Amino acid sequence: ALDKATAIREKQLAEFNAEEKDMLESISALKAAITVLSKHHGSSLLQMPRSHMLGVAATLQHEMSKHASLLEGVLTHSERRAAASFVQAPTDYFDAAPTFKQSYAPQSGEI
Image (tube, rainbow, N blue to C red; front, side, top):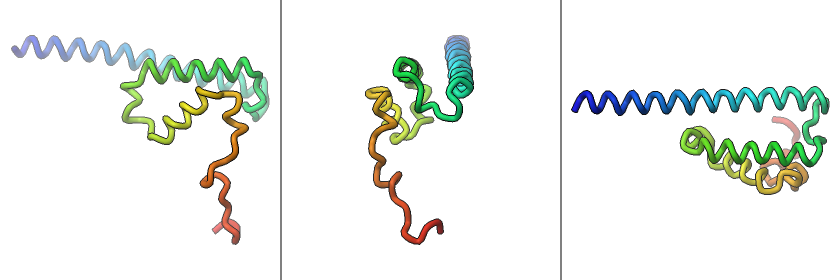
């Protein structure tokens, strides 16, 4: 029984290491993409062509579904909602009216 449990844990460790490696490679690729896009588009990624925005949305959707179990305890509900909103309408996402929390500014200025 101990040998069987050890074999199962070794298999799980190998699967975890493979998924972790894949996720780290994906993160590195996304970081590289952000760097390249930043260089080509200055400080504003919001002015990227529609096709690039759709590509970013497709990559985000793919990675979030592929690694859903790993991201389960990492992303908050509001972060998941924001990502889902971006994936549904990537070209409209940044043009949307701000929510109450985003648009509120105290009358007295900064506290």
